[in-house]
Length: 126
Image (cartoon, rainbow, N blue to C red; front, side, top):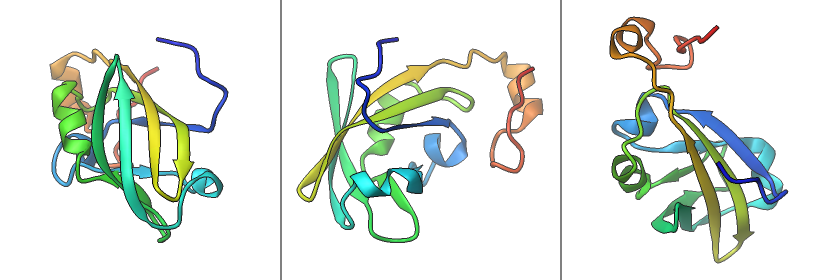
């Protein structure tokens, strides 16, 4: 874990659509003022590596897609893992997020019973 840069960020807990098809992450509307209202190239960095993908903005739902799959698979993201995505740069030509991944390490037997496939059936940790 590295300190945040003091820039806008969001967190997400990996659910089915993040780690299985369609492999995409919805970016909260709270970041809209800092992001382009268009579809532009995006880069996500973590641990000295970069993944190119597409940011789709300007609609009801902003998201990272078309390349998120590579990030998810290359880093072995699983249901329940946490991700912090900090916006390093957001301009009309493209966006850059710095990622941090927090492993859930939930035992498989519990993970299978707990669900976590949709926001209406989250994995709850007390």
